[in-house]
Amino acid sequence: MNTVSAFTHRDPSLLAGPAIHSDVQLFLFREALLLDHERYDEWIALLAPDIRYRTPARFARAIGIEPPLEAPFFEDDYQSLTSRIRELRKSKLVPSPSSSQAAAQTRRLITNVIVTPRNCGEYDVLSYLLIARADPSDNSSWIMTAERYDHLRCAAHSFKICRREIVVDQRAAAGAVEVFL
Image 1 (cartoon, rainbow, N blue to C red):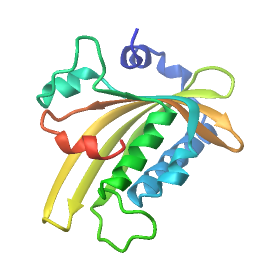
Image 2 (cartoon, rainbow, N blue to C red):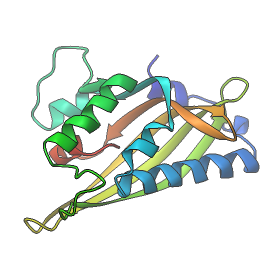
Image 3 (tube, one colour):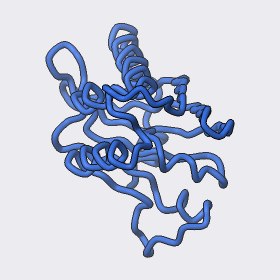
Image 4 (cartoon, helix red, strand yellow):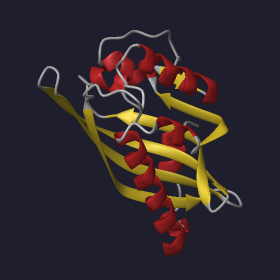
């Protein structure tokens, strides 16, 4: 059973209590802030070493990319996410912290957060994402929405993201491959 169907068939009476819900929501808000401000080294610290970060292939097919059957559009682990950040910086899509180059501005809004206990100290989280990106260099912008399914693990008064599956709503969301969702 995939992440989406596993989560949507849960009994809603099994929701986490208000304290855990608030902690998870604040964690997701902090994560969005780190990504919006391109603080990728701090963002990477929020990820578990065994993370799986993926977007299903049905999204790729919707924007005209044809991956092999049953393959995800992208499926990253900790090492590949770190490599992606390094490559983005190298290609100057993401300026290094010491760069004065004007970067594209991204804003992530996280809403509709639902938290359910999984195991001791672990939670499944459903959230909605609205992401807007504006590039001052060519006066372009785009907006995208998605549903995210996370598996979080408690770690040192916070959480670590162990798994994230992103289901993008738009058919024409090619810009999404340039940002972390």
